[in-house]
Amino acid sequence: MMDTEFLRGRKVLVVEDEMLVAMLLEDILTDCGCVLTIASNVASALECAGAEELDAAILDENLNGQRSYPVADVLARRGIPFMFATGYGEKELARLYPGRPVLAKPYSEDDLVATLTTLCRPPVAG
Image (cartoon, rainbow, N blue to C red):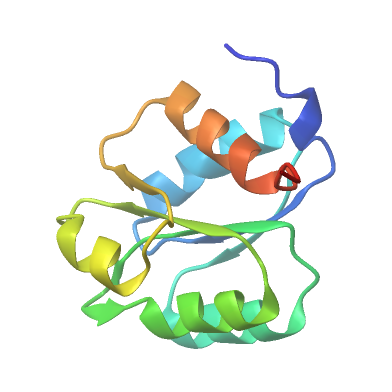
């Protein structure tokens, strides 16, 4: 397991409609010290994305037949970093959201934590 100290106290929105996957993410991220908000549909995710103070978000692409793109758009407008975690292909996401990380399901705990840590770190001025 990697060093997760940097994630302690980070506010993360998890948008996931599969209960078992959401529970697994909750276990992993709370073990890292993250403070979570979990949304299982687009409507509640939009509400959270638009109103809550967040450090990052993890979005499932497909929520019970609805795409999470409106949530991604709100997060992008607010300057909140996000990644997609999806069982679908990456080509459409790469076209619509270039430069946003995409974790293909099933992903490893280490890949999830590493990607989230990268999202939460401020960009290095160059």
